[in-house]
Image (cartoon, rainbow, N blue to C red; front, side, top):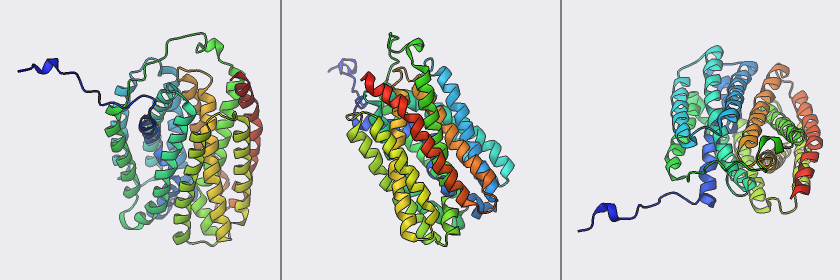
Length: 390
């Protein structure tokens, strides 16, 4: 008889730079922030299911993402010292508990407080995911998969979840977040170790070009704020334009799925033609499509512009996150990029909630368009510098 100790251990983990690993990492980096991908459903669900005002619904979700920004910032400071896998297990468990508690809350104040805490925990988890993704080969491709997962499943969410609220209440939305976290928990054991790279002249803090990184972070903030400020209220915009939910929900779901094409474009293109052209062109295309939402009363314009925004959003943010990650290989600047992204995702709906009043959607469209144009100008220089460095 052979002793079981003589048998080789079976390695069940996927290759650290395999496509499947990138998918698993995409789930890890999405789990703490998946509510952003279904934010139109959450905002409309709070309004329809709990009777919240436009302002309160927006501020609850904004508090969630501001918490995420704080969590992401904490991870920037601690990411080099943490055991990322153990931390991820713990944070996912806490997220599930908070989402279950949220199902039983019905006042704006209590939800703002609890969702803020949820955001802090989720932001830490996303920051860990970003840092680990930065340790893979070709982080741009990893971020492309991230957006593929977010837009693919987010599309399902905005298509079907609003219809569940009248029947099951707001609990249906929070249970979808619980389900996502549970799936991510099942994926964690199959990921490789992704050890921290040894310090070198290429990864020290002193070698990072902080002025260029600052511009990249500002561009990331502006892009996310512009898009999410409008996207959080896109269902209301469609309703005010005279469209009904039977058209709006499927349209937004399909638009998110078309956004997957933007993610696939990043995966296939990567940095073969550099970053400047694909990044600046995609941001400006997002700005044009956003402005055309002034004419959303036409169903085909509402549908086409949302599809264009979905594809260009996924494409451009993949490059912006990859741009931040490219400034070092330890994952620290990637985590900073996650912080800037979350600050934008939180600030957009916060500003929108304060200026929308009852139905001032035209002002939201104009603010988003201007912010995107400024974003393109800010992103140009850091992208150009990194292209010349290659």
